[in-house]
Length: 243
Ligand code: NDP
Image 1 (cartoon, protein in one colour):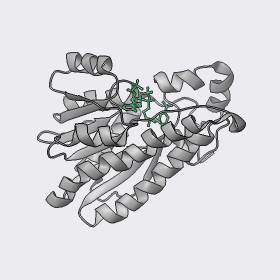
Image 2: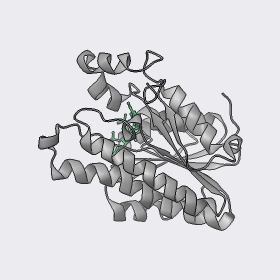
Image 3: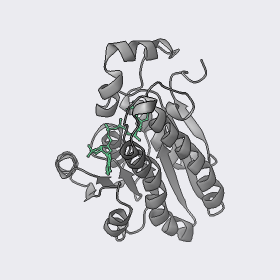
Image 4: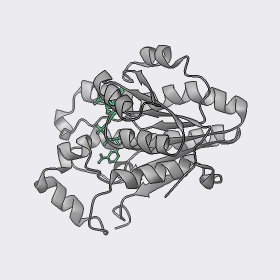
């Protein structure tokens, strides 16, 4: 799928590796000015070396005030992808306060924080698109994923209300909800065959998603081709949730 983002600026969080890196590279290929936000400077340096037009900004999204300070001068942004996420996998009785706080800080609070900063200008200009990267885990329970599933259900809820409030100003807000993708995060848990194979058996298409398939869906939702789509949770799951 090819898109034209010439003349558009898009900010992507969690840009250092995995799906976020894929989004940045494809957006740049499609002509966007990309602002890549991530935590590890070394990952951002690698991304910049591969695509010199990308503007990297190192931010620890876990920290609300640091995020506001470092993003206060980003300038006008046409598209935002809230992609950064963490997964602390623990059985229910082993969940710690740290698992909970860090997960909700990055997966949910940062979505609100970064969107508040970026969407102000979108509302003033009466145009913009935001895509929040949720998960099939917002709709299905996965063993040992209490906190992760909770954060992604929250992302779906936050997205719906953002779509209501920002939609009035022609700013569209949607979610993508992928199944397993074998990025560093995905491999960490589902790369183990005793966990991956049962999951695969529950996906009607019989395979995990490729980064490219999630990236294409995000670019579609960001693009004017999706101009009437607002407030959806768009599964990219090979039919897992339907099964
Ligand atoms: P990865 O862990 O592979 O990459 C996540 C990126 O986000 C990393 O560059 C990471 O940087 C960055 N990041 C994490 N925490 C912070 C932070 N506090 N501040 C700034 N950057 C941060 O994950 P994926 O690419 O797999 O996941 C991307 C999104 O897709 C996430 O929201 C995830 O929940 C969602 N998702 C993933 C699925 C999968 O199977 N992979 C399935 C469904 C949804 P660092 O390396 O420094 O931590």
